[in-house]
Image (tube, rainbow, N blue to C red; front, side, top):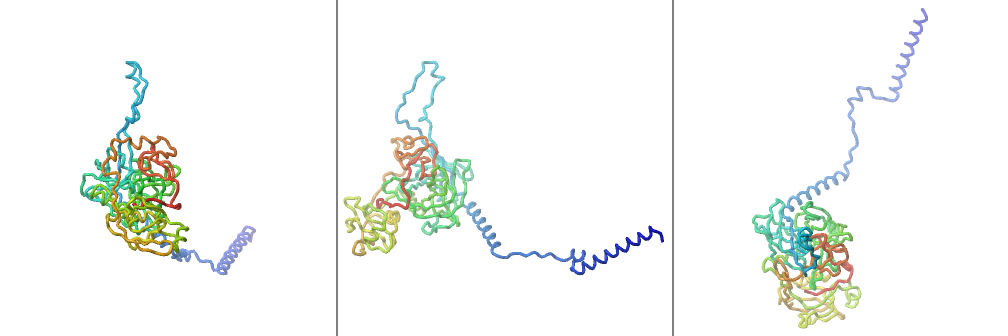
Length: 462
């Protein structure tokens, strides 16, 4: 046997030995064969814990938001308000000799009409629209655009500055009216959607979502009407200038408020929006549609929220109720009934009274002369009184303009951002912080608030 043949035999033995050792090792560690690995099913663990249900809940919530938006948006309208220029006094101008004066004429800025915008929503198929008073109060002409791009001229049915509610009307039929909910049942933490026209026509009919952050909020300084009712719903749904008058709706697509203001140092959304409760707005709107004005009952007292000292003095177990400070009328119905300054009103006709705005609403929207039962706590115990509130009619009647001959509130306000304490609180404008009505142009200002709901609230019963 030659050397070459011997080498090949050695190589074959080594290869055979390697194969035997490989098979032995595979058998020892139980490695799967290739065919077995191909047909064996792979089973990965599947977690059936609540994560899957959470995703399903999020999908359902998203579907609910989409359904509400689809149902509500056709009921929302874009409102364009225009005010004719009103020169308060002739302006002295530098005149050039002819013919140069023809080429250097300077337009009078007061000759330019002022325009604003806001939102509203349809509340009847025949064209009644609910919005904020500050959206329409200074307007000489109102133009309304629907989601389907139809446009109409609108007229003011009536306004109520004390609640910042107004009703306007367009001549149309078969319109999609938005369902009104019950704002008394609104709970802190529940989902709400805001629909409106923020920051101009480019963002019209915008829908944002958030929760109810608080209820019963007072924005001191926002409305300086003597008998103003402030009982706002607070939300973190995004609201910006232009949203004023739009609906705040619950997850059922029912309006629970009218978006009206924001708290912001910049003039734009900072997380704090405020809406007029729909129960209050509904009561006002019904009277405006029926008579063009709001007639209220009055007890004839100045009042404030009770504090800890009042509760201790009267012997209350908790801080609640409204303190009678003084009589606001010489012939005060409350005085005739026996109430005296220092009394703490805790109930009216069995309904608990926690703060000023509640009493204002309970009494103010009763029929004048209708007897009410007051539960009063004073030093020495609890007492019941029967009172017949008198009548107080609104200062401003319904109509397009409150005072056509008066100078516009717009013209009295600065045209740049600054603290505008001289501006009327109902002025049509983008206000200076912190309390900002969300309708009308940026070049106008509102008076700022001095405090929040955490401070003592005072006012008149109605």
